Image 1 (cartoon, one colour):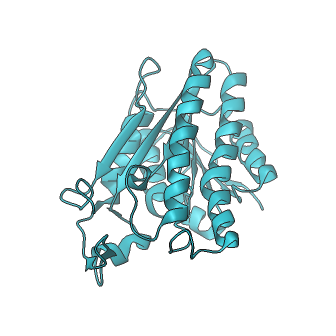
Image 2 (image 1 turned 90 degrees about the horizontal axis):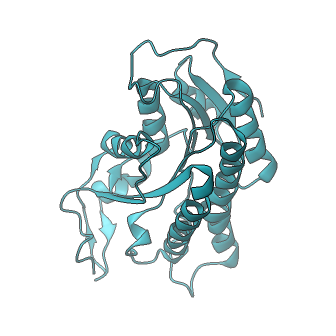
Length: 266
């Protein structure tokens, strides 16, 4: 799979002085939260390596931005992940931020209902893929000068409280919390910080059934149309974490649609 870059530097729309010229890697950048974050990073002055399975979707996210590098890849494949980070480093010389965003909902069902194959596929993307990307980012951040950087893992409110019939997804998002805390601890000596954002009911393509139509399955077996909030607001929360100075770290940030059945869920 080929990487695509557009020559040029700077940001024609201006941007945050703190972010100008910084390099970010965004996984799952072809749609949803990843696309919204990447586009907001462009507006802030970041140079962004866009990663995802679908090249056409990545090019749509980039929209010809001169600070974009599109790298089609499979985050569950170690060679693909290494190629992603090598491309960013070859293009811009360093990696300042990783938004570890790519993920899958996995199968619907209780622990006795889902197949081993579906379980393993969910773990491969949500846990192993996130670990591989974090490992590559940490290696880059340790080796570069000045040393350090920031990793933001996309968890979920399911890292706190599950929805019904979501055992594979819920377990993997609890695992992301452990990954986040371990990276934050082990990265201290190298100026590497790691935080987790847990987002509830931001409006993306895959969340349409929750905000409209039949709604989301509730713990009592009913379905309810739940409140949603714009994906751009979720992206602003990610940018808040990314733009913190090196002297500060947001370890955990929970952002939900106002009024959604999360507190008191069940």
